[in-house]
Image (cartoon, rainbow, N blue to C red):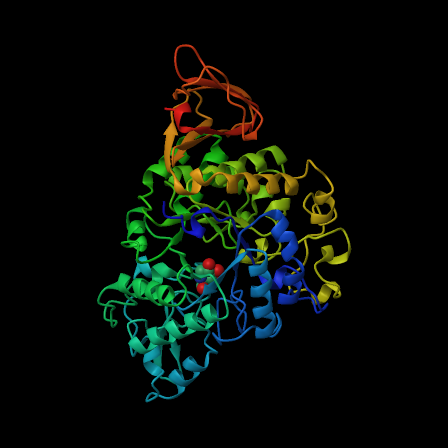
Length: 549
Ligand code: NOJ
């Protein structure tokens, strides 16, 4: 039997070096600090890290405005520190995925500086220019409505005497990916980081990369060929390195990103994210069943499933009335919402800090088809800081202990890259790694067990998924089958306890004890089985082929 590729059964942990751990006391997290924490991550059991952009940057969009693709932001360390980090991660069997932000550059990138100042420069055509901007297209407006004064996607540049195109902020000019020279630059960048040992790239804004920039723009003959060419270059250099795409596209477009197993290996599953959040909010399995239904087959590709990432929690693709209900329950105040489509809170505060409910939510996530992602700090139930602007509310420093600055940094607090959460139920004195390590009932220790169990259950990452009918609307039950083995998973999304009947025959007379969770799954005489679940109760049940049809 062919071994399954590593990313199908990974547990990915997303972190931003600048807010993780500061080794030199200047208030900014750095690679040496991250190296010091690798044993923590190893103990937690994660198998891959996704690093947010760490390249030299004016940092006006959390590093997604890159001005040098071949370096490390000096605030975070040196290229040497990066290489050491990759080696140390590798020693612990932890893979490293880095963000590749090539839909656009910073306006301070030397390519753009030359493009704007010299019409004859070869870099002029690295970007998308027009003399007169076309009329605004409501379908292709700015991605961050309400955050910029001028919401147009064309900005006039005085030295070029022309308008350049940008779907994000005006300081992020879009690259002209129809220009073969730009594509060659991208291959070179990938080659460089693969050479330094990375195991994959998260392709930022993949959806926008393959869209035509404007009606008259030079076009890619076959947009997906761009993604295929990225994959070919990775494969040629590093057989098992992967591409993970940020493709927040309509569900019926998603399968195309996997191509014929020759494009993306992993796709961030925004569809399932929104529907899982809706199911949690409504305490009803219905939206989750709909979400799974809306997903195309991933084929040999894989979904990256998550409850939260470091952007807004985007519920914009839910039907309008459901979206309003979710806002009402999880973001009742205007200040908790963003861009008319998203929530800017972390999971723990959204779930009122209720540990049982947080555990239910993560157990559910880890049981869904795909490779799960944990956002740094969610393993201890970190909160947010809604006094911070926009998406930065969920980007506060990691809370390591109850010492000043949560042990993140020894700098004076005025020098911190972002303020630590100090007050309320999620303040660092209450919520931190050190306190939870020594408490066997803590969320941290529970998460560690969850990760270990998930890694023991390759049926979930590799197998087929089937929803099991139940007679309780709050209970979501499903099975994952792979290689003659099955995992049944049952989750009660409601605070009320219940006894649910599941339409599945266990083909055995005696109850099954959970691999994870507490309740037993018991066969009943007239067929099917039964389970008694506490409010927010759950269970995973692993059985051999001859034990469940
Ligand atoms: C998507 C990233 O997730 C987001 O944080 C960033 O602002 C935009 N791309 C622009 O790069």
